[in-house]
Image (cartoon, rainbow, N blue to C red; front, side, top):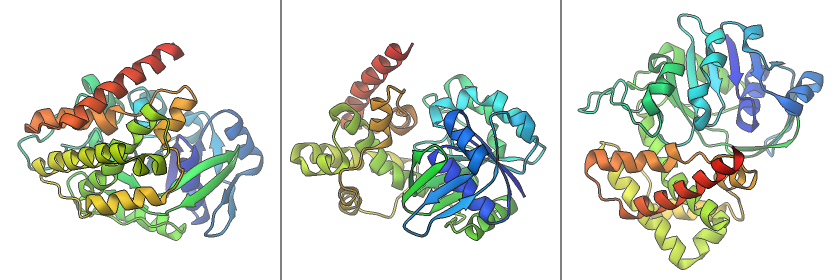
Length: 326
């Protein structure tokens, strides 16, 4: 098996190192000091489950890699539309694209029997730009339950979780999913092939949709948001409205709001990825996390008043960040 990791940041390099440990031919596509260090001394993973090192191939040029069996996409979703030139050299007829993204994926309505079948969600696939770069027939969904960070160039700190749930948009337990799952498991990760990955998408989204934008708007950590009573109530309302939209689309995550809140509070003074991006002056990945659900609320007739207010505020903040960058 030959795998390219496009966007070998904290999650991508962690997955690449694990796959390399399993004997897979892995090519990390990265840039900057992180790439240079990996070229020099490989990837070092520091983990409570045990430290390890891997020496996968590393480059900034996909042409050097050539066609692969699987592309593990570690880019933020707001970079997908521009990924076409990087993806193209990695493709053969059966190459899959395994997108480890937060929020609603561009393939959400692909392959399912619904009145919305093959409908494009403009918030995540504006003008079809993402589908053009990442053809939906190649897509395998991936929901990440691992937390990692780049401690220093070439060094990945694994904080918690090893689960990477994957699944076909049409729910099939396919050969291509099974072979990738087996390789991930051989590398020490959990990688169940789910017949209904959309449940996992909504389960994770319950937290992301509230904590990510609120953390950016308030600069508060997960613990701080949970322990401020009025803000905690805003989070509960956002989760409740998110579950309403999910149910209107036929998806019912098997977890209570109380349990989801308790899990978030246990993370302590953790800054969400959205807040970290804001502090670094980077555009925030909120279209797929929040704006897409508001679009789905419009589509299904859900009111979602709290989601709409927070989305408007977060979108204005994101515009200011983007303007400052440009």
